Length: 283
Image (cartoon, rainbow, N blue to C red; front, side, top):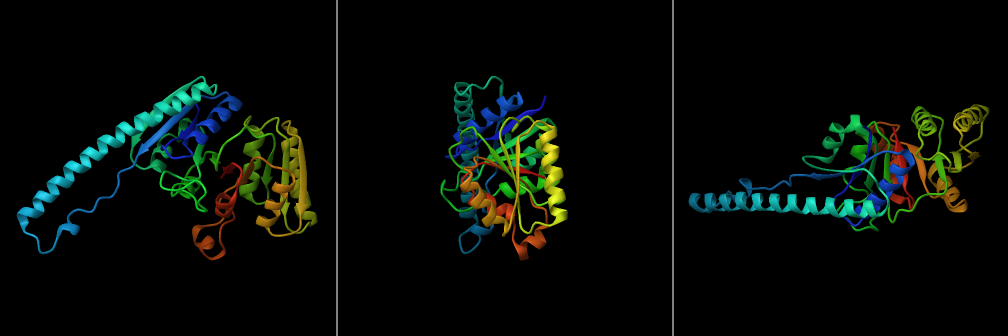
């Protein structure tokens, strides 16, 4: 069975992620899986203990560190179980019907890859447990998940409320067309007014592309307002979002390689960092 996977880590955004997962599960009539990954922290031992201390003292310290590591792992396991149980209780009160709890050792991205065949949507908080909620950054896993996963990703950036409309950032390229196709066939956003926005010069070719995208959505029952607005991508999308009180943004992710983005930057990462509304990322 396909599931909504909500990634829970006990951070300040875990409740927001859970709320978003309940909304998405209701929209798609899909069960929820609350996932907590126990990622092993790197602990320096041998190299740190080399030097002038004696062999016996060094071995004693290594034994102490091994015991401490085991204790920390046990506490992390127990803490993760409590985090999942609390999230489940919250989700049930919010109206969720089917909820599974999954706790796994290892890297979050690898765990999501393992679960991908049974995943319909991944929900993440923009910031993890090591960041404050108003930090102008993104959690360490966001870009890796967005580049690796073939499933849509909903990123919660703060308190989540069910959106009453949404905007698609469209540029006419393959990633954007793929995003349109997936949105058109999904019940997640069906019934919400859609704003299809393309930034830049209006040419016959670009007008044809946005018209085709609009028709594809309308054929699936979406109410679509399509616009081509002169200007650069980020300022255009930001201004449109504010003027039309957009409550959720959808966009194709990382159309360029990491090498190119090193030189020219990434609109995807910039939108994730700066956005004040939830983001639906599709590859």
